[in-house]
Each structure stands twice: as structure tokens, then as C-alpha cells.
Length: 168
Image (cartoon, rainbow, N blue to C red):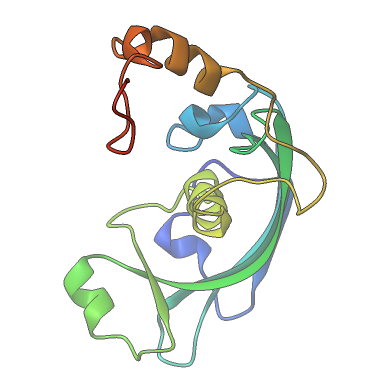
């Protein structure tokens, strides 16, 4: 069962593991990107203290995120399966003091597992959502043909002579 919050005293030397499912549509930053208000993410998260006494969250997130394919405009379930490890810090300044290999997660108070999961999903999403190559095609359209007939110069087509023609 996932708790709503992990307070600073929930972090102990021995990892405490929680797991559960989260509705994708209830994630405020992710919801506007969804093609359908459906789907769940499975989250497993362990809270502990590292050798320096810093709060650490390690875990794994798995989801099939419903996105709109930008090629065919159809529904595309983008698979997310990511492992993560973040160090909880109270401010961005504290995060800058961490070693380069440590990923900071800024939280001045209790940590919300749903917020951590949402951030990890957002980081895993592609810049442009597309089905795998060959799995879809762009929808058929006649936009080019319509543009030709709607052009204000379409009536002049055929009336203008090229330089080589003299009309006689």
C-alpha cells in the first residue's frame, strides 16, 4: 500500500518498501498530456537513509501512458518502465551541493510518492509521441489539392505565357 506522504521520520537506515497503483489522470502535470483519462502506474518505492544521512528514495515505475501519436493522431500507449534513485533535499541550493551522480528531489516537507512517480513518468516521455516505425501511417488528406483550387492565382493559371511564347 502506498502512503499519501512520507515524513522525514519515515526514512530509516533500513529501507521501508511500499508499492501500489496510481491513476494517471489524477496526476496534475501529466493529465493534460494524456490522450485518454485512463490507465494506472505501478510504483514500488523504498525510503531509506544513505551513508551520509541523506533521505533517499529508490524504486521502479511501470505504466502504459495513453498519448496521441503525432503521425497518425491515434491512441498510442507509450510504455514506461524506469528504475530511479533520488536524494531528497530541502532546497535547490542543497541539490547543487550533491555529487554529480546524485539526482536531487526538492521537497521541504513530506514527500508525496505520487509526485515522485509523476515526475519520473514525465522524464521518461518522448519529446514527440509516435508509434514505432511502420506501425501507423499519416491519415489521408486532400489539403494540398484544396489549397491549389482555393488559391487566388488559380484563375490565372493557363493565361500566363512563359518567356518563350509570343502568342503569334
